Length: 223
Image 1: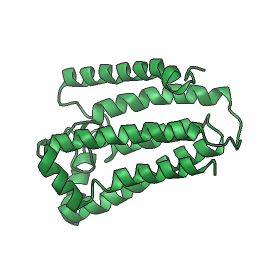
Image 2: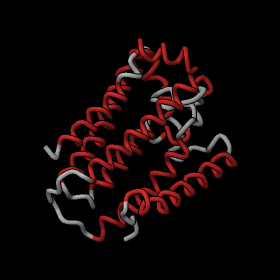
Image 3: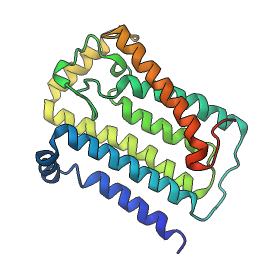
Image 4: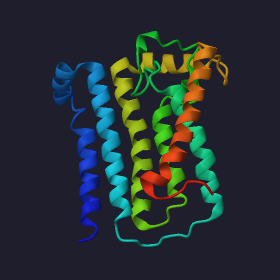
């Protein structure tokens, strides 16, 4: 019975993620909130439900699966710095391949930014966040939590690729992807100033997370 809140929280999390984006529901919400209002509300709800799920996982019965090692904490620390930087460079930028893009009509395949490395940078950030946190959290509840999130991220990439290919048409989707991959592996940013600002913002978010982690979760992320 002690596992019941954990299971209910998981069901609630996926319900609040899947129902609002169903075409019929989303169209009604967008009509009321507007596109930006919907994105803000959906993102806020996602963060609240994620926080709830993490809190509930902490209260689930403790069943050890593997022991924690010092190198795992180092991996999380430095890995999350990279995650924050990539997320800062990707969020709110034009990206016709995935979710989270803004003003996709302005996307320039010759200057794709982090999309040169991946069509789904934000989903990769979510996947690495989950996999990194899986390392030092070797109890069953957290292994389920972070393992499911990692799998959810990878499945999302596959499903979004299928949907985008269908929307674009296979040939147009393939040609756009080839145009992105034809550029240098380290593409020049659209704006160096913008890239620096976003990188600094990513660093500040990382430092903020370091500071809030002990107060919010009761665990210091420092090795």
